Image 1 (cartoon, rainbow, N blue to C red):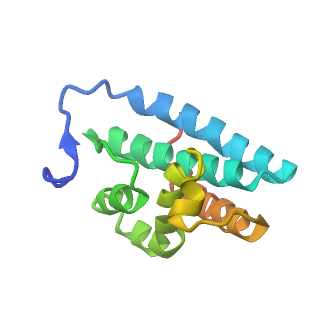
Image 2: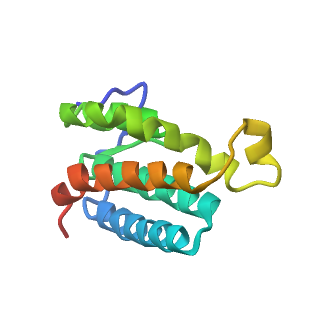
Image 3: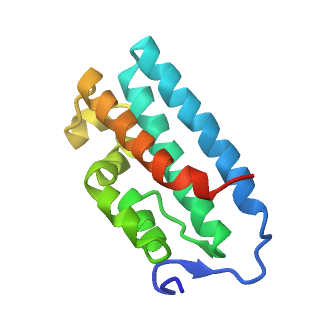
Length: 141
């Protein structure tokens, strides 16, 4: 059972709501891949972060839990309560959180010490693909 101090158990939750989150996650995944192919590194990182956040939230919603954060590490902690093998993804996924902020606001990347280039974007997409391989098959429409 999910920790009540992190996730909120929602017993009356529409059990199909997670499907919408998967759909949104799929769109962000596609946007991340497209931005990467266009060489728009910050956008690729932002959409990779969003795809992972939404896929993790979809998984948690499928378990009746909602966590209102953008922190991939916290979402992964909560998801790991249901699937402990997800903990192995922490080193590659946790760094995605900063792109929720750094890629969205003027001067945020500079202030947060993030420099966008192909290598950074490639790492974000690789992490996103790892999560997809591990979690997406468990969320079949």
